[in-house]
Image (tube, rainbow, N blue to C red; front, side):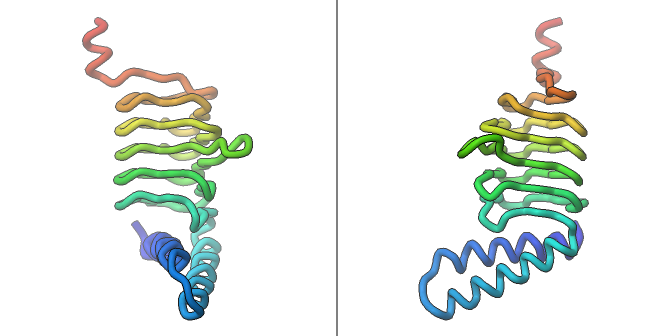
Length: 155
């Protein structure tokens, strides 16, 4: 992960921390963190809301074009490739991403969708339905493919 990406994520984390505090000093630090976040967003060509709940060890190898809605939840140990959108369709209909999820380049996850732990989203997939843990979603609209162990049991 590039230093730009680390700084982008760190500025969002600092903003969330200062937002939970009260007082004039924290208000100024919050504004500074928000300004840093806007600058790093510009440099990385991404639109990741500082309000989004991002898990630990999130990896963005190529953050350009990544859009994450402010109410979205992304779990721990996820990898999000370039040009991914995690967004809403209607009021309050935002995705939640589990832990250890891989999201391929150009994928769109929209609406009130839950992507289970260890799931994989293929490149350019458009996900509008839940993805069970350990499964893969590919295509437009996305179709769910069971994990290897489930396919072996069926055969």
